[in-house]
Image (spheres, rainbow, N blue to C red):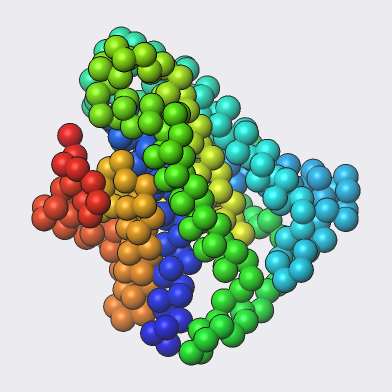
Length: 304
């Protein structure tokens, strides 16, 4: 039973970790908490749903489940489209809102409140377009397969966990071994100095938004496959995402994933030993504790 609880926590934590990586990237560069990130996760899931459904309707063979998974090729194609559409939506919000506030030298609190407003607007429009009724990518049922020591998991769950680990490794490699990644790290350290040394700050900021949007898209699709799709799904993940980003250390991509797994495990253990009604409190407790005891997080620097 304990081993199964740990597995469930790791699976949930992988989704949290992916979303937290997007938050930690944008915070480290733009220096404000983007509360609209959770709703980007929701939009990404619905983008993928719309494209996947359209493809499955036009070409029914694409909707046929592949191998042990509950979905067909229409969903991976929908995910690719979702990454592009979520990136465009993120850049649009930045162009209409955050970018203009940055140009005017808006204070951090103004950017944060603008993020709140953007989140509410995005969520309300999403409900208007798709309704508030929960939905799913597929109605195919999966049987959890035995793995080891009584632990069981579905093929979808194992795929999601593997994708999360691989993506975090790729993002970390991109940030540390590519020119674009080095530019992003330079801007996160000192935006003005990075500009003086020839870094295109505006382009780097757009790249950070796109990285965050791509990870939000994958996290949204994973959440939709493993749980369900709802307009409030990203909003409900927001506190665990910020708790993981701060626990891992702002700017640390591996730290965000490790912290996401810790949050997921903590929630699973809380459900097992305390009660499901206390699950939402776990992220808040972890967030408060890390801010009091180690504000720089496990792998990061002191939060500015």
